[in-house]
Image (cartoon, rainbow over all chains, first blue to last red; front, side, top):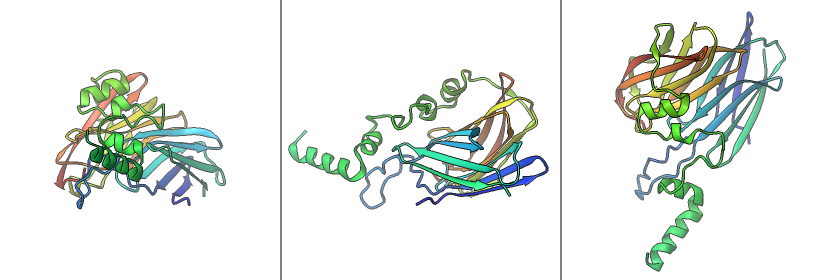
Length: 103
Length: 155
């Protein structure tokens, strides 16, 4: 189930995109408080942001980004109704995508 | 290794996924899922190595035209909002570094031509330290820094 929330709003000629992803962002250095075992690294490595199939921004992350990551960026050339698509891939190969229309 | 130990290890591998356990044990680098991910930079333990591996140089010119918006005091180091914005022309990438984190490089953003030189996210900070933003603009590197006092570390 896609847990990603995207908002894309046009103001003047700038579209501001705000996105919340659902992910534990484990950096692999934390220990389980009960067992003392290291919790396996599990974090988003790459986020690709597109509009109308053209890449606007690519993010590379590690486990230093906070749990349930927030990302905001701005771009020019968007129009109301255009799709903004965000796709992430984590270090375990899992991927998730979501699309919102510019309002 | 005794048999019982090996069995425990196997069990752990099955429970958490063998890749995850191998990563945790430092046997494998977690770059395998994604070929493009710059493991050398994103696993570097110091800033010069991270910058060299990521951007090809550890030196960048200080620029007040890079604005870093961070809280002066972050009560919770697990969630520190960081916004980087600049009016430098021709920006192609913005990278965010928490200097005193065990792994300082946290995020790097590649910007297409349509993208405005602006990114905002939330990072973890282990302790009070500078947050550095490194911007590549017209094939030159610029940076600026802003200190964040962290009350409770969150790495």
